[in-house]
Amino acid sequence: QVQLQESGPGLVKPSETLSLTCDVSGHSITTAYYWGWIRQPPGKGLEWIGNIYHTGKTYYNPSLRSRVTISQHTSKNQFSLRLTSVTAADTAVYYCARLIAVARYFDNWGQGTLVTVSS
Amino acid sequence: SYVLTQPPSVSVAPGKTAKITCGGDNIDSKSVHWYQQKPGQAPVLVMYYDSDRPSGIPERFSGSNSGNTATLTVSRVEAGDEADYFCQVWGSDSDHLIFGGGTKLTVL
Image (cartoon, helix red, strand yellow):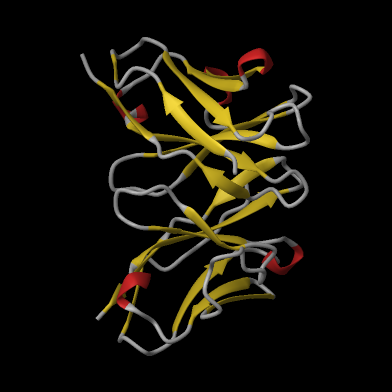
């Protein structure tokens, strides 16, 4: 049973970089799946941030592309998110999840972590 | 870019049937997936490939996709079905993943 767990700072200052890590257990990230990040501002809907395939190929939301980097760390069975130049609009619960490669749906999610952007 | 449109809210009495729609241009050319999210919890997949149910999801949940509208149907609604529901597709022509805005299902 795959399990995902997000970790990282809960508070980030405006203009700084948000960095989160997703620890994956019960499944190797080097198999043929995508691994993705999704966020949800308080009281709002889900926003896809991006995915990384086991080959290292990435896909990003066009609205965030210029500020986002998703990387994989195979030795630790982790993948990570970097979001630069954050503002209050980036305050959200951030989820990591596994994406089925062919159909492109998320079958397993982490519990989510709240990141607040504030000085 | 491709847009998915959901009604903000749907209300239904216990034991009745709720239909949650997801509109998109020629959406029946895409595979639609649905997630249920209860307050304070991560989303849970309740339907994939338009009408396939993951293991553990009650048979009361069903899905369809035709024309410009995909529909998640919850039959014999229970209080525990009260949640936000989100539809999702992969925009294959743009390599982007898209969520609908979400529908809050209220059980009266």
